[in-house]
Image (cartoon, rainbow over all chains, first blue to last red; front, top):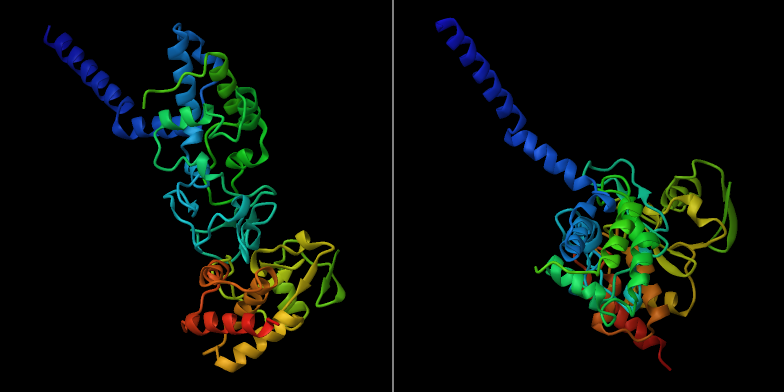
Length: 217
Length: 152
């Protein structure tokens, strides 16, 4: 009897330790980290029966891309873009100018090329200068800095604040625009936005098809 | 092989296509007026004109300038360049001088685009050209002087 108790106790301890290992803060953090780098497939949201709730959930998943610094940094609320994962004001100080392409004498193309440009012999904190043929700031009416995901959602649906786009054009823009696509190919030393542009496009498409509902906040 | 124009003359480069334009200008063409400052487009010392626009040569792979026109401090010319040169000398703008070829290239480009710049125009265009001697007040005054000298 005592032996049985002892063995049960050891088994319980092992189970406890095992569960403890599975749910340790480190493993939870790892899961969260992996979750932040991937996108759930649009099809996986079919299990949400309520269409409105499904639509909100789809946009919240897409929000992992939309609210990433790679995207928000060039949707500034002021005339100055942000920079880096910590979203500091762009250095050197540059400003919107005509078409979001900078001021005379200091346009985006003074430094940014049509492609990401690796730099050599530099500190670990800078490995490349980002670039894209369409490099420019989003117009100020499309500013995302300081807005909640719900507010950004309403903004994206509003033709007065989305460049006059229909919802079909929004899907096309998110799924195929080259500068949007830069977020998944941001150059050495920069974290890409989660998932792939195709997965992101499918989330936005499913969101629109399910009524384009927005999160409350 | 990359072919481009440097200060009006056709040049070729057949080395590593990733070589920064700055290194080609300085090490291969031996035009050392254009300076290396930071290597990451943060200081402006390496500014040249690429197809008429200011460009940081340190972050410009040579392969990307096929067929382009490059002008350095040694070759910059025209009424804006003449006015800037005169204004710079008139105010003794440089202190140590290291950043000045970049400053001059940016100032000339600004005057080509905005012949009569305001202080805000100057700030906007020159913000990427750092001067450790802090000659900014003389740079601004010299650009105004150059603009005034081109009038009439």
